[in-house]
Image (cartoon, rainbow, N blue to C red; front, side, top):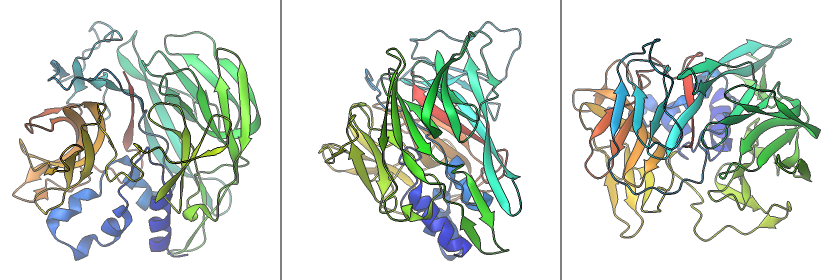
Length: 417
């Protein structure tokens, strides 16, 4: 398998929560064959894996937003971190918060119903022989200190509200932990089958564990231009009710070859009533009930999403690709069907729509505009912005990632506030 083939298959196999556009691989590999305007579609932390060896990426966005009215939020964006400042904001506020001078941010990034309670950086490391593994270093927001703190965990998912997190010590892991952000002992749940990923349900009451028999983040380098993915076998998924101390394992093998991607994680749907996986590869979803039995696709479920943010909280807008060459991203009005391109605004190209803050504001990756259709330095130098999809105004939330393709790049995890 050539690197071009592997990149395409792996990108198609990535999770819907990363929501990589279906044609992202073709855009990345054909970059020199198209106009400068279209180059800006290849962004975000997930693209780092193309160069890094086509490793899969973890769940980036938590679902289940509610109570969003689409009104313009208050803004309190920091332009520098003050170690003597008071601890971070309390839960429940919808104030827009950011650290516009730092990348990764040092203080909380949040807007509307969405917050970045955690982020990770990634690197590739030698394992043994020709094998390499993609390893993540996690930082978790500490409300007492008001800053992001480095953690020892191999995997981490903040619960809605950011007061606790589910963690794995290693990958694969023999147990799942739930840790309170403000200190205290870790509550451990031993597993019958090793875990490669864990995520909270949208309401923060249950855990979804994807089980593997080996490390799903390894590849074997066979030559300069030819790679072979080491496919750990996915064995199924486990649902854990931490309050009741109950867990249920459901076997679920990967259908076919899984599209050549090493990770084949499961995810919650928006209301937490179903879970699903990518199939065919990355082009359709297969749903399961809490009993592990297959379920039909819900009628209101967007089966394929062009942009990471997906459907807005109230269902008004769908984050989409632009239908013309004046922009890369767009929002589709779900009532009228009209697609509105998000054209350059306030000196920024809007490159990728990452997560909805509310029904009128979306958190996006953007590069600094150079001329009419170019980015300062490159499209891989980008920052998070809050974008008003109705009026186009933006608020910077973080500093610039200088190159989102390089090891060490930070990647946000969006959760319900």
